[in-house]
Image (tube, rainbow, N blue to C red):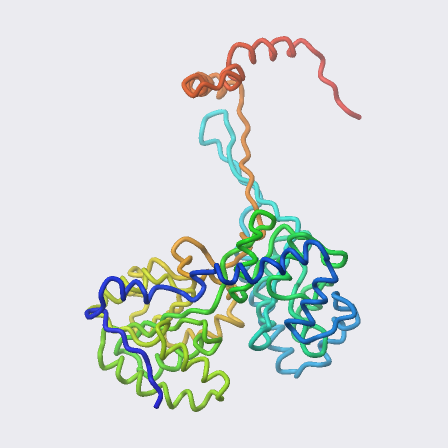
Length: 448
């Protein structure tokens, strides 16, 4: 008999409630022990270690780590025309969203009379976009990472992905690369991919940053190598909260709840409601929906919804429901209510918020526009979805006129004196005035 975990917030102790908030990736210590020798091998042996990892972990003997231009160019012919059109639609939607997200390259404002202050945005030099393929093929991750990187103007964008049984990247990932102008795809996955782009090998270039979702082993490697490469926004195992009230069919809540729970047994998925009837009806609908999924994915979903990382949470009130939702800070939050916009002010923490009965997760994940690479592990309380800002950095720009200098320098000098920085103090003292007064008599030099 199928069993769905049921959690009544009124009956849970503080410790039990806290346990519901824990994620499978919360403790990476075991994974770190596993990946430490992999990282060391890649650092010391380069390509040879990556080829060995492909044999050990992927069961593939590789002659080369780089996907050929011919394989990238031929990818479209390997795909069903419906998927080709879906990829084109997704790329265009994601591109348009992120183009609209781009900030003004430079802004300056005279907030202080005689002083111009502002920001200048510039792209990062290089980024590796990780495309996972452990429990299936996930080429949409290439779109959701590489398109924002290209829109932001990152100078070098590469894709790293585990090799498939045929010894290359899957056809959809190759086609996406050709469509968005990426020539470099490298066949390495997991911790070894992070090490490869952190240190560089004979074939794989080192990069300033790595982005994209992946396994706990990938997360552990990113954490261990964070002093060597920017590990990007955290994106671990999938997690979802569906909030539902009685204004929509409870079966719809059950349907959406299964979406993220089918990713794997390390996923998390909860239906949160303050209505006992909704809880009961949704629980009754889930087994029938499992029967329409296929046993492989249904097995993952059963493990998640029947364990301590998923199921149905019954709250004593709407306010208590959203207190739990905010404490959880889920990657995905679906709000199934005809009054979804009225509930929006109650939400503080979530990677993405999908409002209303038609805002289906697959639409948001694949073709709506925003990236589906979202903060996991409760980090949505402080972190944001992947966007063009992950591939941009901001420099403060300032210009101070003589008049503004004369007004601000005494205050700056007082701070420097109090903090004991003599050179700081001298830099805004009469010494500066003497240097500038001597220079005022010199002729300016103009290059021709």
